[in-house]
Length: 361
Image 1 (cartoon, rainbow, N blue to C red):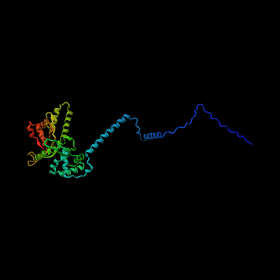
Image 2: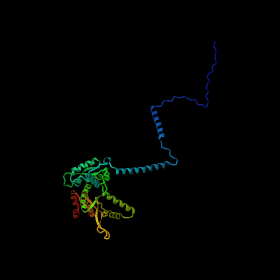
Image 3: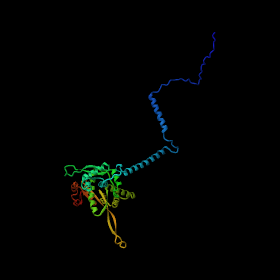
Image 4: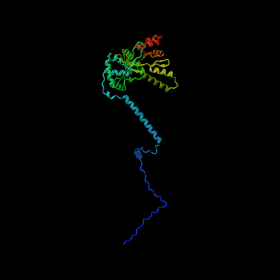
């Protein structure tokens, strides 16, 4: 017997008129390249969230923040530059700390520091009794320590030499100057120079030391001591500094009057409206004796020291006639090398007295 069990028919879901039909659409998978690009964007966004700038206070505007940041950066940079320059100027190379030099080596470095560029032949003649080989050994050692630099230059041809003559010139390095300033060898008031500055003037500048040696022997024989040297670089700087101060104090004054006043202050000759500056000035001390008052101690003399100076000039064939005449009128102690005397004589053949006052180098 079959029993029919009634079954509920499935009800049909009625859609509401305001409910849209949801259609299930199958989205295509993104390309692997697009997935990689999307991941990079998400990582960059996350990095900016984690490492972004600190929130700015409402009271501080963006323009004010930029100004404060730029000002503080400018002050910091200027201080760092000043400290760096001071460190470079005063530092001593690590390989030379505690290094002991022989007396001849220390004297060589002092002469190089005082005159910037010196011919090695002149150093051998004045410091090593003409022993060039011994000087070469010391220079080789100083070069290995980074204290000294040497260079060979060609001398000008005067028409008598068939071959070009070459000489070796030495100077201090920056590290050499730093070591010399800390060594205690530099006299008080002496400036130390280093490095080759003008290649075309090395031949002329290297003769200043030779002229100095001749003048120094005469000064020391007359009782001078504690000799210091001021090259034209330093003298020109002092003159320009004084001219600037006078003009700033009274801008209405004429330049000729100002130069004349500065020349008198610096004890320099004023010729044809120009301040004549020598190649070098030798400053020295000289002891003089002065008797005390008769009512005091009549049996004792008091010794005092006065300062003096002598200006030297090295003339070359490159000097013009007017330049030679101005140097002669300035009263400098003039020197000239043998290779330049013929050219100088041709330029001042009418002034025999001028040529007579030029000393040989």
